[in-house]
Amino acid sequence: MSNTFGKIFRLTSFGASHGAAIGGVIDGIPSNISLNLQNIQQELNRRKPGQSKLTTQRKEADKVKFLSGIFEGKTTGDPIGFIIENTDEKSKDYAHIKNAFRPSHADFTYQKKYGIRDYRGGGRSSARTTASIVVAGAIAKQILDDISISAYVNAVGDLKLKKNYQDLDFCQIETSPVRCPDAKMAQKFIEKIENTKKIGDTIGGQVTCVVKNVPIGLGEPVFDKLQARLAYAMLNIPAVKGFEYGSGFFGSKMLGSQHNDIFLPNEKTKTNYSGGIQGGISNGMDIYFTLAFKPVATIMQDQESIDINGEIIKISGKGRHDPCVVPRAVPIVEALAAITLLDFMLLDKSLNSKK
Image (cartoon, rainbow, N blue to C red):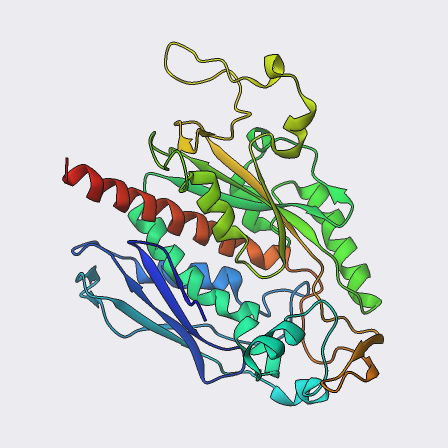
């Protein structure tokens, strides 16, 4: 089982949804870097469950405890080890699926691959494990202090924010529980999620991420293209079904004369259909990409499925689940963007030091 992400800045995570704790070990962080531990906790608070009626009502404080690698507020160069205790697990809510497979969930594939699974909350396949990603990303953000990374919800179901990111005030993202920086659309998103929850169903959505002040030159031209590494990172988030950057699929409808980003004397471009990346390498313009999230697989309605013996059964979700994951996914998206960019910057630094 692969549990490590990154090449130089590396996160190895551990733990499961209803185990004693989740946590991780972060390697590759340079020494003598000052860290604001309160800011790390604040990032975790953005992801934690029970923060609004739009999310699962599981009550977890998600307090991170650092075990190594930080001394008197600075990194030592040692691996940073940390844990986050699980304090509100209710394993009995999953007893009914011990021998059953939820449709479109990891239950079936996990069981077939490993011959065993922790059915309590999805075990290792649970989105709860993303808390470790947020811790690593919060540290990466502080090291990348000149780079701005902002993600927001731009769609819920068939409702979509029509404004371009340049017309939005990112300071408004956290003013709404749905994390949409447009007040009118945020209210529509909230109503859509609430109405979906009332009927025991779930709904998908989209998250857009914008990265500003990225230096020119991150990424490789062949197998380690920046957009490829970003896509790889984002597609590891549970429920993500699609990734597009820059003009994305819309660009396939354009002519080259319309799509080309014309250079200006200051080395900027008139347009940014490239999404800040050309030839797999950052060009200094804003990097922006959008992720598509599927509806949560566990719904509070009867569905037909099979058990471990292949017998047809009726199954319905119980317990506490998100009716829509996108509001809580925002800090996860930002975290993985930060980890990916820092990994490239450290790699670039190591390569340049050998020249």
